[in-house]
Image (cartoon, rainbow, N blue to C red; front, side, top):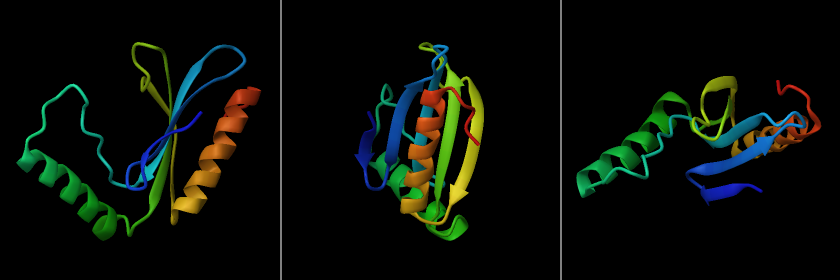
Length: 111
């Protein structure tokens, strides 16, 4: 089951392979930095994080999207980066995201 934060933040899903290894997949705009949920965020922090992420995505990455796959466990879901790829559009990134989730669920290593 995919958890979609919003159109700007992308999609995130936890997947387990047949051997029980946990993977965390994320498709998000390139340059997006997730704000920690346990930290307080003031108005200035919100503006800097949101505006800065938007500018980095548009100016440096040209509006592209990234798909990142981490292998980890329940304590540290982002322990090892398995794959990190950039795509031009959200549609391409979402298709690659779904394909990678299917590969992992079948027990194959994602590209």
